[in-house]
Length: 192
Image (cartoon, rainbow, N blue to C red; front, side, top):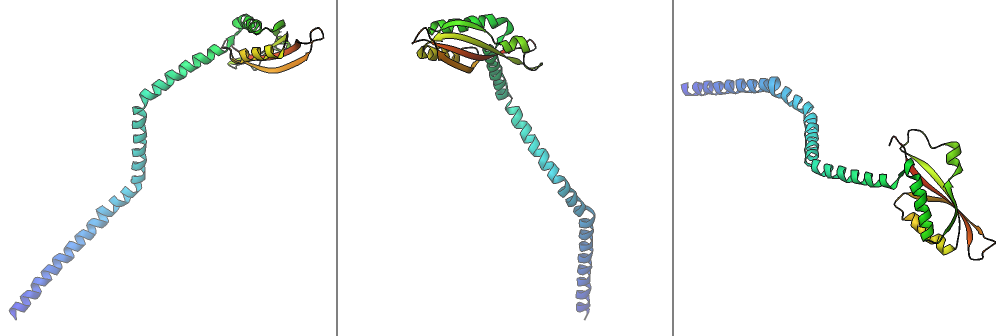
């Protein structure tokens, strides 16, 4: 009988140790582990967002040499595009270039001058980088010569756009026509 009592007493000790261990684990979970897990759940999206931003920043730092090359390329393009626009001081040179193009195409210039709208009404809105500068040309030529002249205008170093063409009969010549051409070029302003 003694053995049996000792066995029960020994099992009670084990049960008591088990209950104490369970209580300690339960208290540890409720007091420490559960709040830590809840806090981790709240901060995990922020940590993930920061990690993503860090990767983006790393990629941006790695790409700096590429960005520098792109900036240099854009500066070269800007310089090239600025050369395609005249300044007010270069207008007389531009008119001479138009005259030379016409002469090379066998187009006889009767008159070439800034369009009346420029001298009477002024320019586009103040503060813009460039302003429209229309030029009117009255000339005599055939269709082929006119085509050659328009091709040269299209391929000129300075940006020009033909906005109006009128072809009328020349009563003095059956081969030659009277041509009116309105060309728009753009002039860089002083503040550009």
